[in-house]
Image (tube, rainbow, N blue to C red; front, top):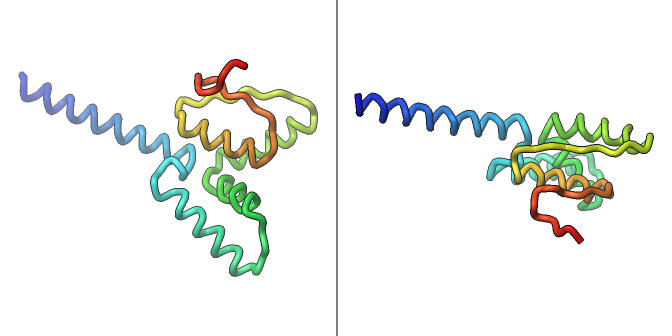
Length: 122
């Protein structure tokens, strides 16, 4: 019975690891090591083929939005909600996703407050 429980534990650990990777896929490509590099390569290629001159902040925003369908949709929603004076509360279980959202908020010049313990209360 002991070897079987070790195998079951290993399978459970492997499954949890796979689920975590799938959650990262669904949230944003920047959650992977190579995601930011690949996204920046796509933006550079797009700029070269279209002969656009973009500001670095514009490129960063485009890269962040291209890296996630969820964030692209959130961008559209937040734009409309901001225009009508709404306030928004966003939850995420991943601290690194909050980092990406924070970068997005800065690039869009949206005021935000992060409630995960990394911000001071003053």
